[in-house]
Image (cartoon, rainbow, N blue to C red):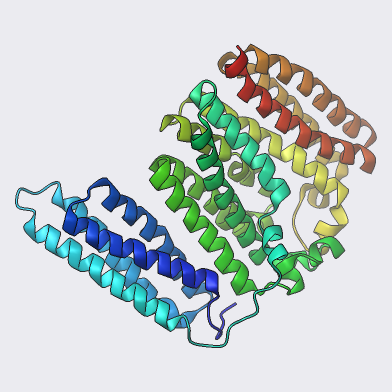
Length: 406
């Protein structure tokens, strides 16, 4: 994917923002601004990482200045941390300011070098919306919001909720864009629907999708770390990396248990919401995480039964193709039973309103899974797949409502 072309305006904007934040680090150290000073570092750092990763993967001429900017920023952060631990902090402050200033200079060099080469086409703006997978994102945001309600024990506050959701949306959108970029070869083989996706079809060049995904991910960390708390930012980043690196980069192409292990990525948003409300993690957060984790296999295996031929054509090892439909329906039923049993068990922590909803919603989930196991028709798989989406949404709405009404 390496390109001789010039980076796009979004990556350049990220470098500019990194330079401005780095300048704020220098000014903050000189003026002893304290918290605002470290906030600027939390903005600069992810943007510099973003620029370096884009350089390594797509723009070789940017590697040296981008690497220098990041290393120098890390040195500035390290020496800044020493200030509080030494009796005579003068030398630490000098080195800290010098490293931050050098990082600023390297960032400006990176920006200048980014204008070299012929620019690649950007593609239609609507395709960038598609890259974020809005329908999938909406469910992830709902589970994240529910986690925040549970953590807050009720209404978490409008501004706080909106900030968390924006940061989580940036993380989810960034991960989805990187997934589009990495799966473009598979998408071309899985039928007309996926072949028409922005990167697979060529409407959005792969380096542009890479930039878009990286910048959204960096902005997510910067926003959450500076306006919510660092734990929330780290959790969103971990979910992003697990989905992109572990699931998309390795599991999806190597094992039919891909979605079982990879489901951990989609289960992170409730942790993000809970941490945003409390600044920590506790047992209720783990319960919500495990609900999504257990829900993921029957949901995606129902989809795999629906489009088994597409996965086979792309050589993606999904359970129906590797072990057959009967084994897949058996696994779906077993996971469904375990899922519903677990959702009822955690009602101890999530409340009576949630528990009643879990019982009613879960009974129908098991019925649909049993019908699929008995008959094994594509229609049964379609019904279970679509109901599973409504099931998870309603279950998490119930979890969010419980502390408000009970």
